[in-house]
Amino acid sequence: MKRFLGWLGLLLIPMCTLAQVFGTVDAVNGAVEIVSTDGTTATPALGQKLLVGQTVQTHKDGELHAVTEDGGLLALRPNSTFKMLHYQATQDDKSVIDMSLVRGALRSITGWIGKLNPGGYRVTTSTATIGIRGTDHEVTVVDVGGGRDHAGTYDSVLEGATIVRSAQGELHVQAGQNGFAAKDIQALPVLLADRPEFLGQRLLRLEERIQTRKENLRQRMREVIGDRLEGRLEGRFEDRPEMARAVREKWDNLNDDQRETARKRLIRRAQKRNGD
Image (cartoon, rainbow, N blue to C red; front, side):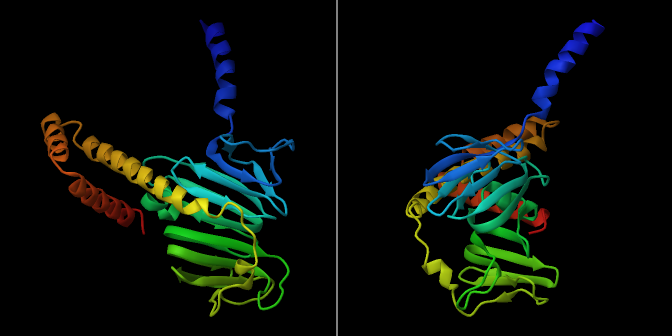
């Protein structure tokens, strides 16, 4: 028996050390590479799983879109380098999505992790760290300035809000605003009066698909959040089966609009509990 358990333990070791999946390739265009932790390089394919610790590199004409396990969407722009540092999609306040943008630009539409535990979301660059509150935003790293665009980290918010943090302080950025944390300058992050020039100078071949994909993912995310919160609510009454049945019957008797309203209330409570 001891020998059998030893063999079983050896069989289980690889399963425990497998890299964690954080997303799936949803669209790819141009020259893109995925560099594994052992240094091997591969060209991504549609439907391919992306792993924590891998580096995704796009070249001059390259773009990659990925759907995260929690229903978010990541759009990596041309000439960019990105890595998922830590990802944990659970049903509690331990959910984490921790990303590194070394260069280039990343548009991030948050999934249910950003909704239920916004404090667990982070994008890190060389000059700033960006946190969110249920957001669609784009982070850009400019290494060498030009025109009115200076070197540093830019955060452009399309929906929701973000917090740009640097060694000098933090800045709250609302929808429609652009935040900036300078490189090699000891200054607080600031709001920009004008939209960065580089945003209007890029050629993005996959951008048009984002809105439709975003709406589809948002609907799916609402369903997932609702299911998770319903399960969490019922779990509170697992030692009181009569109360659990009453909760389920009441939920089943709600119409679609009432269920959506209830889901939103539960989401707000979860966000408040997790510090949003």
